[in-house]
Amino acid sequence: MSNFIETDAVIVGAGPVGLFQVFELGLLEIKAHVIDLLPYAGGQCIELYPDKPIYDIPAIPVCTGKELTDGLMKQIEPFGATFHYNQEVSTIARQPDGRFLLETSSGTQFMTKTIFIAAGMGAFQPRLLNLDGVAKFADADASAPQVFYKVKNRAAFANQDVVILGGGDSALDWTIDFMSDGPFKAKSVTLIHRRDGFVAAPASVAKMRALCDAQQMKFMVGQVTAFEETEGRMTSVTVTGVDGETTSVKLDLLLIFFGLSPKLGPIAEWGLDIERRQLKVDTEKFQTSEKGIFAVGDINNYPGKKKLILSGFHEAALAAFGATAIIFPDKKVMLQYTTTSPKLHKVLGVETPVFER
Image 1: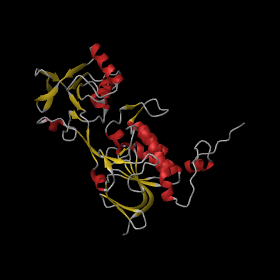
Image 2 (image 1 turned 45 degrees about the vertical axis):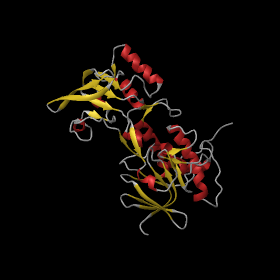
Image 3 (image 1 turned 90 degrees about the vertical axis):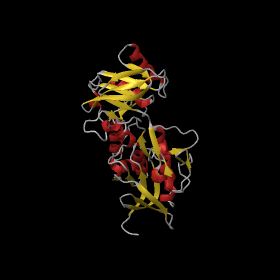
Image 4 (image 1 turned 90 degrees about the horizontal axis):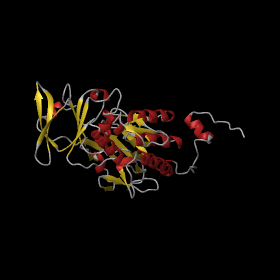
């Protein structure tokens, strides 16, 4: 064994929870290496909804996925984490001394005392529209795409006739976003869902219905069963209703939100206890069935689990403290507060404030 990187902690996943894991470990003077399959940090927030507003981050009334990622990256600057992008963890093997030998798809090896899995839903792909011929218009294959499974560039939808498929939060959120006044407002929006019921926030459904009542957009119950094209461009889709009647809807762009198909990928081969394609953890330190391997964020499962970024931040804090017994077995680690601790101020590179009484 040679040329491996020795470290106290490896974090698998550079989404918001993985980034905050860097911060919580850094406060405890634990430096981390971070591995992610994507070529950049941010995880689902950047890959799926960089411009989508997020409203449930404490003390931040609203921010986009990109803004949240940028803020977290700024917050962890003092801790000097090393990022390894475009790599997937392929194997993990326990060593005789209790550490783990971890290897990535590019052959990079790490010898680490602890591992923090913050891989979101693991490897995931959007569920595709099952319609012959539609793939040639898709974002990944077309030179001038018209079919999208995520929004990377809001400006592309401005002043366009947009058809959105789906009945979840993403479909409703983008429907409302593209009908809101501003530089990215669409020319028209038609939302199509297979039934008149939604798995989305009630407030979003109410806003969508209000827009329909005001004749600012259209909602249709049915499924897209065909499309028309002219000179290589999609010009309309055919919607078949529950009664079998068909309607032609013109469009410039088609946005599809049928959900994601999560796959654990190599994680499933690591010998950890798995329940419903998620890693089982305790709620004291969010450790998996393997001592020294922790799981935080959407990848884990425990009684009462809520898939919120807020919950993942809490899990990262407890996981960091839980790991200290492994990384510092002979050291008593005390809880300190960033507001008052000179030691943490030094770690963070800030001056200790002087309070006048």
